[in-house]
Image (cartoon, rainbow, N blue to C red; front, side, top):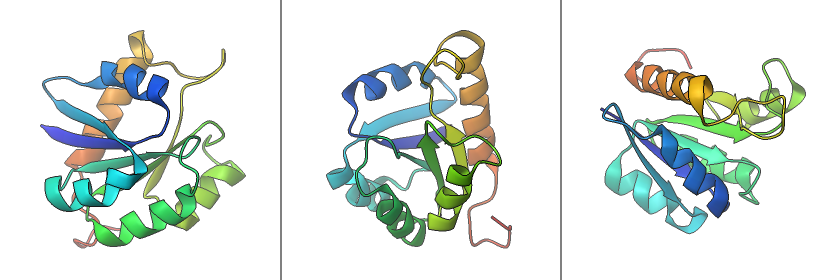
Length: 136
């Protein structure tokens, strides 16, 4: 089972993202103040930061990427592949970037999108940890 921790200050998103939890993906949501302690205590496979709700998300991603071998994911509305925003999150220390569901044209956390998000996260957790000889 893959363990995912999502750092968010958006209670509605925290509630919606619970739909991804399954027998294959354990999921918990925490506030910024709890992020470092949770990472050190629980050692999740994936740590996703909701960059739209976390005020100092660049600094948080940078710090967390140094503290944990977990895959660090930036979740952002403007994080489409090849976008400038996506490049900036990677530069900050995110291993990968995933577009956050919002608006009519974006992915959602229901139906096919929900399954695709969950599969993507589980596959990400199955990869070897950062720093273990695998390029990030």
